Image (cartoon, rainbow, N blue to C red; front, top):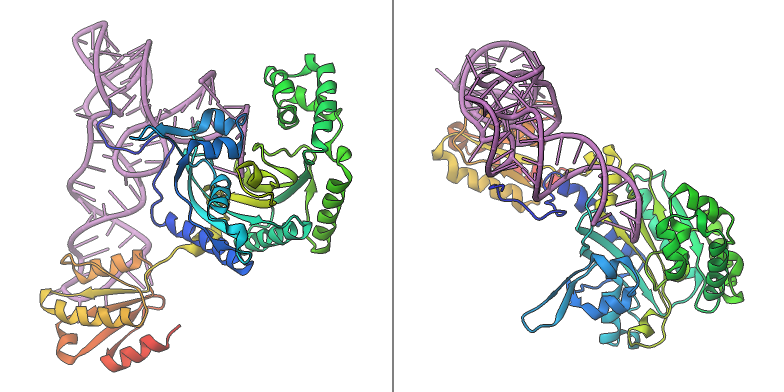
Length: 420
RNA sequence: GUGAGAGUAGCUCAGUUGGCAGAGCACUGGAUUGUGGCUCCAGUGGUCGUGGGUUCAAGUCCCAUCUCUCACCCCA
């Protein structure tokens, strides 16, 4: 039995300087959410279990085996949220937000919880950001959201990702496809893996996703869903692709792209990157018309996506990571206890003018102050010793070129106001 | 839930047929009394994941267990 205190399996601490990268990623997304008119909605970490059972679907892996569910002291079944959409939809219905027409585009951000075996890019507490658009069933709004994604990814230095799209039809046309698919799969049953044999009855669409070679060969002989779309879905899908081309957004049509959550209809999409191993999807989403009604609200449409912050941070290029590290601008080195009151005045002056300053109150030699300042990557060191106190000045050293000068207080203040 | 690999200093790791617990980096101090990076010198730092077993003797062999990693699966 290990004595050292440690965190729960599958969860982790985000430490500096890594946390700067997280703030960078989250900041870029928030900026683009705002530019595209999304308002933040803060949803609770946990809900009554039924919200997710009904929202995500009883047959899904998430609901069947991955949720953190427990009874609270009132014996209510509570579940830590495994995703965000169900909660946003619940809030949308609960507060009658469909009556307030200006607010139909939301974004959320925060930790999600799923009980899974941890591996690269997959943790039991992981972080998602996502958006939801209600009451707009157009292809246009889908392309608007994807354009936002493309712009945000560009700003974060992603240039070799792949956007996959598909349409999985609606409640009118998908059943027909499923029926045909199920019949054809039964004809080739002997060549499928055990899991897929089970899926034929349970959820044949999942067979399309199977990565085993034998199953893929069978799948390659199967019809694709886009050939079975009803007129409405086909038109919607065609318009969607047309607009993507028009916006010069490159994409790959992947008729095998099936989202794992029950609520999706028509457009689905995901973005894949190459350097993440098996967990290569950094974001994904689609349309979920019917979900709001399913959860007891009016029959309004829905469209959205979620991105994995953990994976986004992992996939970021090294030079972008380094650029996002946030160092203090100033370090103050004081020499001897007697100059501490004066040093406080100087530090306050720097900070009042909007510049970050780090110091260390352990009695140190100037050499060790300088070493620390160097490690902190600061731009300037302010040195305060008895000489400076006597003259009422400061010694300002530029750490990039090594130059330094004595500077009186009013000149120093001018310097602080003007630089940058 | 299934399979494989790993766990030794803060980090990355070496450690031979079982025989004194090691290196590099990092950290602290010094070479330079009030000046960083480069160099040199010195020092601090370990219940070898944990529990048990075999043995005169276990980091090393055996069993169990925990955690991490990768993959399956699933998804963001």
